Amino acid sequence: MPHQLTLKMAQHLNFNKSDLVLSMAKKLGISELNTLSRIDHLILEMTTQVALDRKIEVRGFGVFRKKYIRPRKFTNPKTQQVTYLGETTTFHFKPSKKLITSND
Image (cartoon, rainbow, N blue to C red; front, top):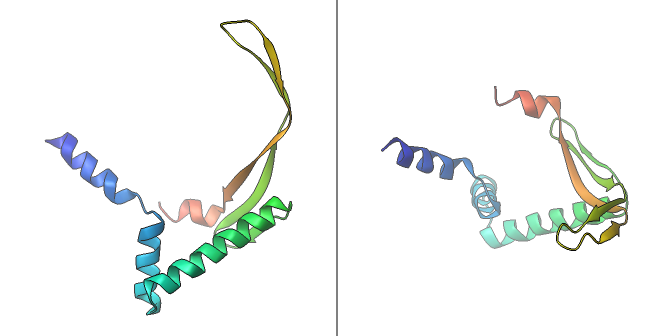
């Protein structure tokens, strides 16, 4: 029985895009379709700016930036073939101290 309770509680801890749309539409008093469009534009603009090596800083929330991962080599364990992987990038988010401590 405790396992089922834990699963139900874990399901409520996730807050996905559709939950965000519903919540914002209700709070702003606008349609869900309009809210979805605004969120999509925000995400598109953020990813575009980060892809252009710009840092996005939202005070009290955090910083979004492009993170570079150094070139590295790896060996296929089956064939022992050495392969090289060049430098890659990933999307990185660093939460602000205020955001980290707000859940305590």
